[in-house]
Image (cartoon, rainbow, N blue to C red; front, top):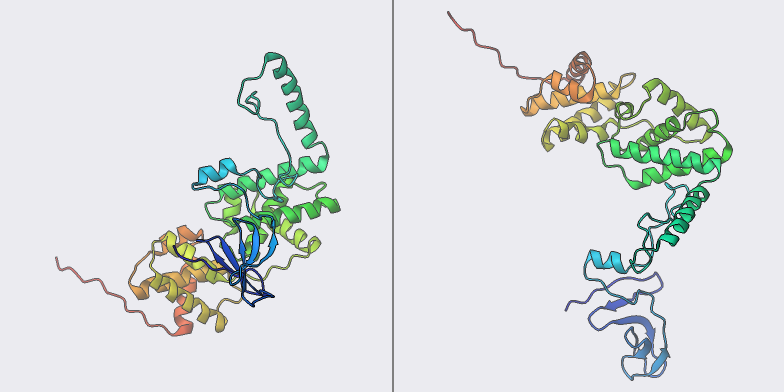
Length: 334
């Protein structure tokens, strides 16, 4: 069998031999100077040279059971999910299920069923008795709905940050008189921009009941009260998303990124929308690499107008002095 090595801490290198269940530490035997070996099977610290037992009855740090499949691990594990901020009670609550069976799987007697039903009802009432808890339940359910509705992979870190900022607003009493769904939706959009995730405001509006004006107004308010600083979004992060939707190759993406960088350096992007610049760069890259896409296709994918793409495209070609060869249509003699 192979030997597997890992580093435990910065003080010394610990080598783990999974074949013999031995752990070699940098400590040496005080009698002969040999390496001290930890044997997990016998729970002892012994010298590998002279066999001196340095310490015995060492407690094991891992579980006492073994698993060979995922199903065995889930069945034998006796701990729950990790603590999360996206649940109002951090996921530490208990609940009584609707199966009406005991811990051995046997069906409960009829006289005990009514007792369990009363306990179940009391448990649900006690789990969210305060108004803040009810507010968090509504907010976090909307957060999960929005995350699942958007057709894009969002890291769990974003949802945790949204829940953290919402708890801060709730503790300061800044959610009163404002829509809970609007606050959660705006926080979700702000933190996606902050973490450079290519989500547009159109994606948020399509999957929520709010328009751009309401989200932008709430974004200004939350940035002020929560002191959240969001840098201007780099248009390059959207290239791969729109290129994949248009079925464009990596060559087009690299050329479009290069065109955008050059446009930013000479000041073409100042005072103009970033999506128009992205559309113009993608259209120009398609022409230069001969992977042709029409302006209408790009405009429909990016949810902008063809006029915007055409204006940015002409501006990039003029400022960067790019020559494009166009094939003229042949005249047909009748």
